[in-house]
Amino acid sequence: MDEILLEMKGITKSYFGIKALSSANLQIRKGEVHALMGENGAGKSTLMKVLTGLVKPDEGEIYFQGERVTIGSPKAALDMGIAMIHQELNPIPEMTIAENLFLGRESRYSYLPFVNRRRIHEDTERLLQEYHLSLTPNQKVKELNVAQKQMLEIIKALTYDAKLIIMDEPTSALSDEEVQTLFAVIKRIKQEGVPVIYISHRMEEIFALADRVTVLRDGEYIGTEPISNLTKESLITMMVGRPLTSIFPKTEAAIGEPVLEVRGLTRKGVFEEISFQVHRGEILGIAGLMGAGRSEVMRAVFGIDRADSGEIWIDGVKASIRRPIDAIALGMAMVTEDRKEQGLVLSRSIRENISLANLHKVARSGFVRSREEKRLCELMMKEISIKASGLGQQVSFLSGGNQQKVVLAKWLINRPKVLILDEPTRGIDVKAKAEIYRLISEFACQGMCIVMVSSELPEIMGMSDRILVMGEGRIKGEFWRDRVTQEEILECAIGGDGIV
Image 1 (cartoon, rainbow, N blue to C red):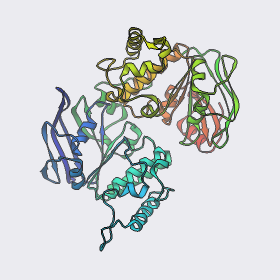
Image 2: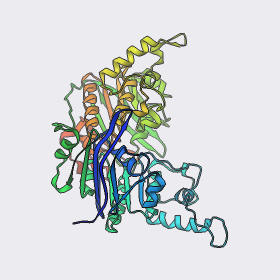
Image 3: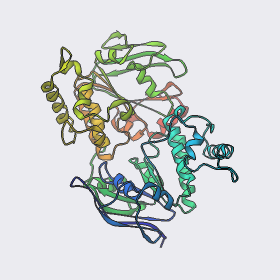
């Protein structure tokens, strides 16, 4: 039998009388990749907070290396060899890469109480080369993109003498190439006997990496199974308590006349000669590798960024879109890829977030009409099934799926003609994804034309009527959903040309 490194038994934690965990269990063996699965709100984060000393459990026991332990703080967890890479990145932007990597454990001269900066620089340079990052130790972290910051956090965790590493959605902002680098790192860690607790909503990653899977549901332990005993369908059933007959509940909508037309849109060095049409009732999927220019095109269409040349037509009329407010006035809406940075005010309530983009509807003479604001917000909350204690709940306390619904709600009040969705299900669980897909299908049936940018090919193929493939800032191919495979889309994105 494989040696057991960690056992968590009967872990219970309540907040204000509501149980976040109820007798949850977790067992980790040395040298395994162990997936921790469950919907948002299932208790995964709370269980990991208990393990890393951020939260004290009300009941339960933790055994580490065969001994019962109490983990009173994150430092105590690190001292024991438990390192966690959080989904919410927390580097210090004004400090350099080297300073961030070795913060609090800087090398010092043996004979002087000063930091040995040359040693730190050399160690950082070695690590950056080892993990194939084209960065320099003296670069400030604020200059890095999200994917580079994610890799930096992964490297930082690995530099500790870790006996157990927890990875929470580590690939959410990584390109395909960076994901493969991460997978190689995980396999190397595993060979060295260090187990990894891997939390992800991406099924393909779980089946590619995990040895065993533990599932939580509504704070309770459902079970642990070898990955070889599971299928995608059986794992989903464990997570949601019932089979999902269709992950992609696409309804065939009547496709009408063109609503949005883009002609020769160009932004030098970013994308060139982008032309396409989207029809009433159609879902147009845009696929491609990270850096292909997909999001950048949509930002230009919506007026967030300025294009150098090209035309945008709405309902057969040439449009002048210089700012998002111009796009909104023309009946367009855009759900951006980073809901927390660009789509929500996390410290504000559901009501305030929904009404923020619609003050012209609820204000008169500079004052908000509270009754009308409440009426509209309650209508949207009911229509798209936002699960919360009420309109006054702060959005930071909602699950990822419900946060995304709030973003949708603020745009749908205006009943847009064109709805642009950039990574609409990033970072949300499988059940919440199915709910978002159902809403997208309903919008299409109502006559909206929808443009959906996504890095997840099953999502693109499951929901789109037509698919554009982008690469290197150009449209490389166009396909009908029932006449293409995932392999053909990938081949087109990497270098080939595709036709309908």
